[in-house]
Structures are given as C-alpha cells and as structure tokens.
Image (cartoon, rainbow, N blue to C red; front, side, top):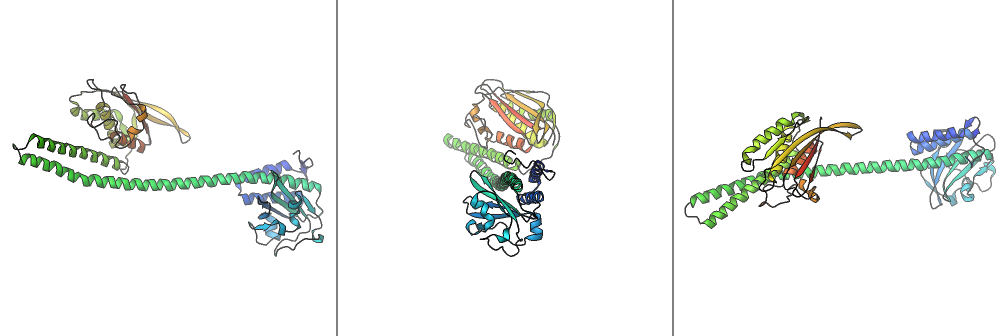
Length: 433
C-alpha cells in the first residue's frame, strides 16, 4: 500500500476488502468473469457508469479488447469487438495513457481536439480515467472508467491504479491456473488415449497368443505321434543314431507344447473374470504342496508353511500363484542339497487413496542358487531365463504369470536375492476387495 498512501479507505469501503473479494472471485470465476467483477468494484468506488479492461501485446503496438463492466455491457455498449486486436497508432485519445506511460484524465472528453469517433453502439463518453499497468517496463494492460457525475481526481487515479495492479496480479495467477488445468487436461487425455491404445494392442496380442498356441498344438502332437509310429514301424532295424534323432524330435516337441501352454495361460489371465471370495491361504499352500510332491521324488524338498492370513481373492489364480512360486523355489535348488522352502505371511497397513488399507504380505524363501539383483526386473518378464534349458528346466513364464496374477489383484511382487544364498519373494495383496 506504500505506492497508494491515500486509499486505505474510501467512502467507508476498505480497499483491502475489495482486494480480498477480488481474490475470492479468482477461485470461482473464469478470467473474463473475474475482470468484469473487478471493473464492477472499481465503478462503485469511483461512481463511474462505464468501465473496460484491455490487454496490450508484447510488441506494444496492439490492444486486445478483453472485458467491459456488467453495466457497460448491459446498458451502454452494444458494439462487437471483444477479443479483437486494434493498432495503438490508429486508436483515439483514450489510449493516451499508453503513449504517455502514465494515468490520463479526460474530464471534458467531447471537447478534446484530435479525438476520433466511437463505433456504432459504443457508450457515450463524457469523462474518462484510463491507467496503464506496467510490468518489467512493459505496458501489459490498460484499465479505464468513465462518466463519473463530477470530474475525476487524483484520489480516483490512486484507486484505479491500485486495483488495476491487483487485477493484473490476479490475471497472471488465473492464467497460470488455467494453463496448468489445460496442461493437466491434455495430459489426462493423452494418458487415456495411450491407455486405450495399449489395451487394444494387449487385446490383439492376447488374441494372437491364444490362436497361435491353439494352432501350434496340433502340429506338435502330430510330430510326436509320427515319431512314435516311425520308431514302432522300424522297430529292431532302426540305428542308434536315428533313434537319437527321433528322441530329440519328441523332446523338442514336448518342450514346445509346454511353452505353448504357458503362453496360453499367460495370455488368458487378462481376459479371465476374477471371482473374489474368502480364501484360506494355508489350505491352498498345503494342497499345492501335496499335488507337487509326486514330481519331487528325487529332490524331496522340505516345505515349511507358517500360519497364513485369510484374504479375499480369486482362488484359482491364487492357487496358480503358489504353484509357480513353490515350483520355482524347488527347481533352482543347489545340486546335492535338500531344497528348503519357507512360506510365511503377515497383515500390514499401507497408505492408499487417502486412507490406510490392510494388505497381506506373503514371503516365499528358498535356500537355492539365488541370482544377482541386477536381474531382479528381468526375471518377471515373459520368456526370460537366467539359465539354459540344460542347466534347469522351465519355460521362463512362471514368474511372469505370477506378476500378472498379483497385478490383477491390485498387489505387487518383489524379490531379494544373492548368488549362492537363495532368494526371497515378497507378494503384497489387498486383504479385501
């Protein structure tokens, strides 16, 4: 207020109160509405009946007609032109404040020499006060009022200049606010478009994987069948070398079948409808362990299952999750050592969407070969393997399927590991849906 020492109060109205009202308008009004309300306030303070607010281009050569007061628009001025550009050199004496770079009072406007005619429908001008808004040595806007019953004074200049500066401050904030909103809207639109595009591509990929898997199954079965027929037809006459070739054919066909089944399982996860219901994780872990024991006749792993929480989940997919994690833990065991797999769980709270939510954190720990953590992200990708088929069996799809199952349940899966020290997988799943 130091620049405007005479306007703390005027006519019983505090200028500070007016300023606060203008900032309140900023919250709920558009830029155009905000400027109009600013002009309405200034009209009341100066007893004026017309008011306008216009921007000045950075080149300082053009005026952009922006806003009139409510009274001006409804009662006096019916000319078109809002948003239009006018050359300052061709404008009348009402832009003298731009040429002189200071407020200008015209208390007898009709008698002024050099004034130009007004457009059809423009309000009649008898008296006029116009002030420039100067920022960083550039005139950025002009604010004018007119037709006060008596002549405009220096006090009016102080009032209008102060509120013109306030208006520009609010304009800048409102512009940044609207620019930020537009940027957010554009970003949201792009995200939605990108999401829709990715969903479509994912749908196409799933369709392709499903069709390819089904179509490849039959040729693979024929390879195995005809290999068996050739061996049977040539029984007793087949050489050891040819027999080795046939065995390799059957082995490759069998591996490809396993790969196709895994691919089909992975692609179908996204399209399967989830059925959320109470799931006893201990019961599922026990059943999976018992179902897998027949294929562990040689390794005879020790599976330790602690008390696990009950959650709401799709039982079929959670069963598949446990199958893959336990199989993976046993498969990558150290040669000559008994595999030990420890499964435990606990309930934790995590912040999400403005509130604390309960989650079940499962851990599946093994004493296997482990791996370098630089591969931690890679192991969850489809068909990614850290070892050759000769070293360890598998299709490279198990952990990818685990991540997709966990993701569809709104959870997360991470791992900690060291070469030779085993691995520990952490699965975080919502307790309820």
